[in-house]
Image (cartoon, rainbow, N blue to C red):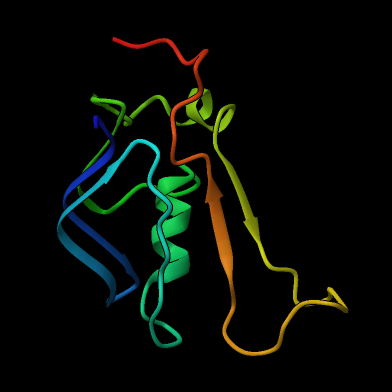
Length: 112
């Protein structure tokens, strides 16, 4: 199975606080990925990185084998990010849930 997302030495911080420190993360195409952790643990930050809404302060994010830097706007056309709305009346209580889709490349996504 090919790797859809490859993150290497990714660090994300806000001001002086390191929120995310990922030496290596590979997400194969077709993977369903679940994230769990405490509040402030970097789950939403990781999803924003995977949806190309943020760029890490250091490290590299690759999508479908290619670097994403400078391609964020293009890539946002094929990736969706749906954070749970805190105003949704039927949303479960508890931790914030979010999803980034698709983790499987679209059949029409140009390879290469």
